[in-house]
Amino acid sequence: MITRNRVESRDLTIGIVGLGYVGLPTALGFHDAGFNVIGLDISERVINSLKRGENPGDDPAFDGAIPTDEKWNITLNPSEAVPFCDVVIVTVPTPVLDDHRPDLRFVKSAGVSIFENITREKRPVVVLESTVYPGVTREIWGPLLEKYELEEGRDVDLAYCPERFVPGDPEHGVRQVPRVVGANDSGVCAALADLYSTLTTGEVHPVSSIEVAEAAKVVENVQRDLNIALVNELALIFPEIGIDVEEVLSAAATKWNFHRYTPGIGVGGHCIPVDPYYLIQKATAAGAPVDLISSARSVNANMPKQVATRILNNAAKLGRTPNNLKILLLGWSYKPGIADVRETPSEPLASALIEAGSKVYVWDPFIQKDELQDAPVIWVESPIDVSADVVVLCTAHQVVLEIDWKELRDTSELGLFYDGRRVVNMNDLRNAGWITAGVGYP
Image (cartoon, rainbow, N blue to C red; front, side, top):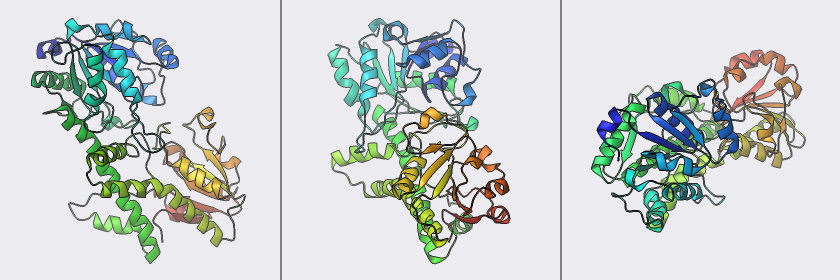
């Protein structure tokens, strides 16, 4: 059983189920804090890379950071991991299906692997970190406890501690961000708070139940979705009345309680485009209204199509129809500096442009070519290889911002540039010969 004394003496073995964007840095963090760590994943590629001491993922922060000592063990087999763990942390994906209903198969599968292998005498704590709606931990894992004849509070304890770090952001990594911990047993909750305090320099905030912790995570991302939806909608409104949305937002931000956000081609990643659907599902099932949350999600989900329409309208003003228009997208990952393409808005933007008849090319030096093999785009090794009619900045990688715009302009017959992230100095582009447009410009 987990106790404060065992946390302080580092006399615990921590199991991490799922060694992806969340699980790997979590495992490394607990290892660095002095605990025995056993990592478990279903991917042979990931496990084999880690056993060789190699970074299996896309975040360069973990290059050269994989341990090989006796406190670091990696396996594909749950029976080689779970029975030895005092704490098992689950960091598996929680995506949505095509109809936006939550897909909880990975949470259930992880539960099966854990509960059929635990050592009852240890009374391990099983902690879910994946984003879910309030109630999922018990809805999915409760029946599994019954199936394997496990009693919560005697054989095992359940808890929830939502992940909330930012991939690619060293100031908001797993070792820095505050955490929320929820468990129904107050003693277990307190001991878990002590455990997570060894992982992060941020505050660890215990709450009264698993459900409160689950709800807190969803609300964090729903709020961001709402705020981004507001500025995205303003970016569609103000240009129609001849006003630059960024000038408006900058002016409004001079008030002390205004929260500044920047519009763009859409939102990506596994959190903001996904998590609101989890709350929508739960609220709808409970008969509660979700009009505001649903509207915000619709605004952000439709932003790539709105941007595609405006790109094509700008090209039409220059006498070019969408048919066979050569459009180069600068960036494919959903955020700068990493190769994460989960829910990237570049994909629906490309699809809308292709559906209109245009040819879409992509340059993103962070992405491997085989990762785009299922996308209906043409991969290029250099932006100057395309001779694009239209260039669209989709991801503000530093390498994108440092492009020689004059050299690129010399390859373009039409010379239309569209800033989808509001990050480029338009005067510099116009001086280089570009015709400029962008999100929120009149």
